[in-house]
Image 1 (cartoon, rainbow, N blue to C red):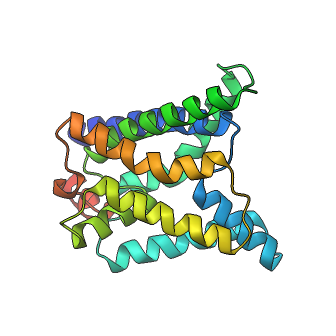
Image 2: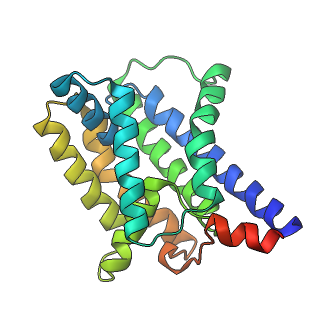
Length: 213
């Protein structure tokens, strides 16, 4: 039990660090992330609420992860439930003043992406499953061994960006920067730690529960 408590603490520490980076990308105020732009674009086209579209896309991603046999573990559950609350908590503290400079906003967004990548490194290493979108990236990367995980992330973000454009989603400078730097940040941070996420063996929730008995 002690081992899993340590691993779950690690997962949540990583998710909190990820949330700090995510807060910075939002606070930069220079454009929303590609996935959010896609959700808003589909919502505008269909009249279905943003929240419903967001949930549906997450379900589609999760089903895809399961189809690729990516393990759905307690880390996946923590990510789905707690990350948003961590961001809310950081925003409630409001550690940064409002940003009006495009240059400062761009630097803040890029810094946030690197912090997010460090958070991903921390929580993925715990081997308790990844969040749905990270599982999608790693699952595709397993099937494309010639490409780095960072490059796969760039390709995924590029496809999402093009879909957001097709659905007339609100594209900004931050959206374009996210396409380029999200995967780049992952590759640089993972490279600094000699970390290859495809080599991490994750437990699904059923395996973890069996080991806890």
